[in-house]
Image (cartoon, rainbow, N blue to C red; front, side):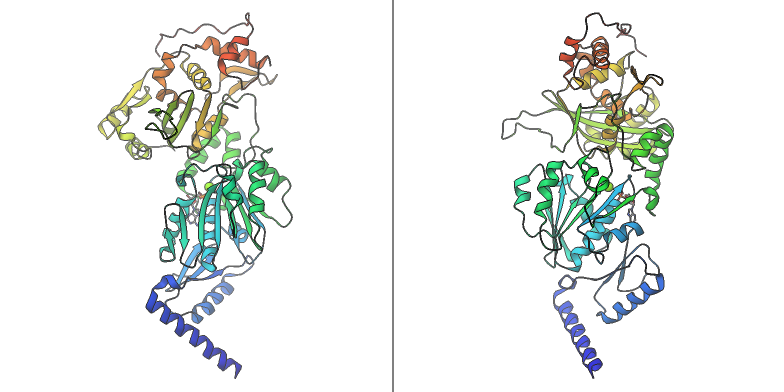
Length: 523
Ligand SMILES: Nc1ncnc2c1ncn2[C@@H]1O[C@H](COP(=O)(O)OP(=O)(O)O)[C@@H](O)[C@H]1O
Ligand SMILES: [Mg+2]
């Protein structure tokens, strides 16, 4: 009798849902969701899908969230695949206040968290705050990543993608905010169910202090994804060194990603070859050691910005630029295009195109990733005249060769160090890495930092130097000042981060100097 009543009730619900579909379209009823449990075998999961499917009205979609698709595509079931480790981490059937994935690049962290969150907002009305340390504009947020994933999973009927928010048809909502850019707004936010901190390695201790109390609703969650940088970073300390009780924390690298793409693998193999330590950090997810040998240590910040191209409301004058520079990849080296700006004493690096092992006929397409590249003067490495003429004939008429001279690398470094600030846009990930890794040689026995520059991690930096070349020649600080400054720095006689001019003045008068450089010699 009860079974009969239940059947009748089920039939009634199905009939009601069918009617809703017919009158309002699919958006009124979000898909049903099944998460594959960590220990569940294929047959059990299949059976669950089968049972759920038979209870749902034909039009209602079923999302099967799983590590991999286990059976042939079928009507009414859409597979949402995540790497198994991240699936276990994100599965809401295991409650957790914190879900943290950290590790190397290419381990599917961003994609998986985006997918996991999209599914969860479909399951029930959920307010998600996508937080970053700094967010200059919506373009710096995960808005694009989420919209792309909604598109890939063909879930557009249930979302309205607006310019600054993503709204779910069931009243779910994704909002995007920078914690440091907008602390008051963050503090006053109500009703957040989930906050996702992507690229959280940049979060300061102060930002965590602001953010965590904001997420105070019962059952609310804090999701964190990051690629570790220094072991002393607040995020690493908070979630890896001493994780909060009950936090789900997992370490993942590219090997955990069944869809690790070939282009990324080419980059990974390249770095393994030229610098295993750097590869251990970037791809292996290990922490990086801060070192005195770092050439640009303390000299740059990673911050989102929009170039000022017209006198702004607050009176800021238009920036000079953009300036573009290109470095050609030989065989397996990266090919790079950089676009930068100068305002007063600040150098802004706005865009990069960077790829390893790019054939000549693919270079135009690579450069097209930098907005406006085809119309810009691009100053390029003169070592490959045939590439320059090829580019001139293939959509890049304004590419030209720049001169190099003995000491031009050191002059470039001195020039870059002279800016009060060097601001790198967060999307310029490879340039940021090079700024971190570009180093002086270190004496193997004594550990002393030597004035020679290691010939690695210099592709974006070379491109930047070419972009800035007219300014480098004009500014009359030579290599001599630079060596003075370096010698003084090595002897601990001046603060490391002091401006170049001050450092040079306070350098000892009789410091033994490197041989003077003949600046007119062209290599
Ligand atoms: N579920 C997936 N299905 C297909 N490809 C995926 C999936 N997850 C990740 N990928 C591929 O792996 C790449 C790296 O993933 P991403 O999330 O950007 O890694 P991370 O954030 O760890 O650096 C993506 O650009 C995509 O090509
Ligand atoms: Mg990522």
